[in-house]
Amino acid sequence: MSFFSGIPVAPPIEVFHRNKQYLDEKAPEKVNLTIGAYRTNEGVPMVLPVVKQAEIELANDSSLNHEYLPVLGHEGFRNAAMELVLGEDSPAIKEKRAFGIQCLSGTGSLRAGAEFLAGVVGLKTAYVSQPTWGNHKLVFKNAGFTAINTYTYWNAEKRCVNIDQLVDDLDNAPEKSVIILHGCAHNPTGMDPTQEQWKRIAQVIKKRNLFPFFDIAYQGFATGDPNADAWAVRYFVDQGLEMVVAQSFAKNFGLYNERVGNLTVVVNDKEVIPGFLSQMSLVIRANWSNPPAHGAQVVHLVLTNPDKRQQWMDSIKEMSGRIKTMREALRTKLEALGTPGTWNHITEQIGMFSFTGLTGAQVDHLIKAYKIFLLSDGRINICGLNTSNIDYVANAIDRTVR
Ligand code: PMP
Image (cartoon, rainbow, N blue to C red):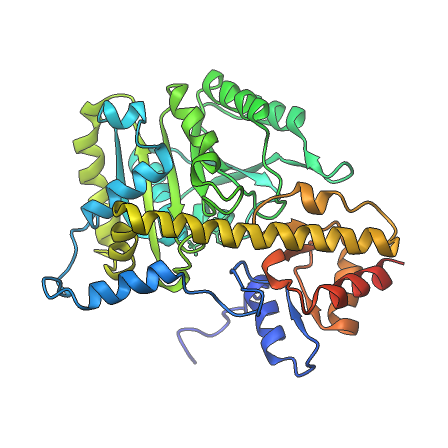
């Protein structure tokens, strides 16, 4: 008899499960379109040159040591991260009613923000987009939200944002619900609201007294310009809304396993800040006590040094540019093959992912017959495509769809 007898085996986390299937596969033609991580045209992970350089400088900096950081994190990093998302000229920063809290990558930022909203503020109802990133519901549930609902996001038939239904759903949400919004490069659909659509979303959030919780895990990856990708967040600030913004530096700095994240908070009354920070310190103290320093030091060094920042912007352009090229190549090849259906959505979508519209049965076939691994909802990571495998993938999709 064990304390742990009878614990049912939980279903596997699809994205990691599929990634492992890929790694275990022996066939040399295998293709990995699963996990949301950047790959070069050679199919390997990328260490950004400026990140490597910053790491060398930090390793040689004898003033640094491995003492604990403060509970709320590295101050320079928190400010640099906040400025990156809100913009240096943000009215909220000028009015000293915005601040950052270092957390463990995007997930930890979501978790700390959600636990604070549920436990300290007493908000218990959250809304996530339908569909959304696989972890949102789990994070909010474990953080103490008792109702996690969905708002309509996707029109599967037209492959676009179903804005009328989205606004209607938010209009019917109870007051003080927390609305989780993807700041840019919506995962998994790859389709963001237009600026006009964001305006309608902000309006209904304001009118219904809802609380916006932005999740921005891909700033810079959508358009190649971190400022353009932060447009929605900044628009909400301009509208006078309070909000929290979970930032991840996993993708845009290639620092996946360093767990570098920040929760940027915008309030409309700076008097509330001491209470907020003191309570947030307790949330973090009970979770990880204080965050890791290395990745935060790297991001801080790069963002605050003009030359390094420029090199980082160049890398972002390179990565997002390669993704765009691969989108165009896949669409062009499918259209040239006369593959049944329309494929314009592949280039209309942005960010790492494409919601291909392939069905579950088609996904199974691609995995079994061609060893092309993707998610059962038809989401592919465009970064898994390169000049060596694009023909193979396009032909496989073509034969599978026919
Ligand atoms: N939000 C979304 C929408 C994501 O896609 C991801 C990464 N897959 C994250 C948050 C957080 O990732 P991480 O914790 O690695 O920063």
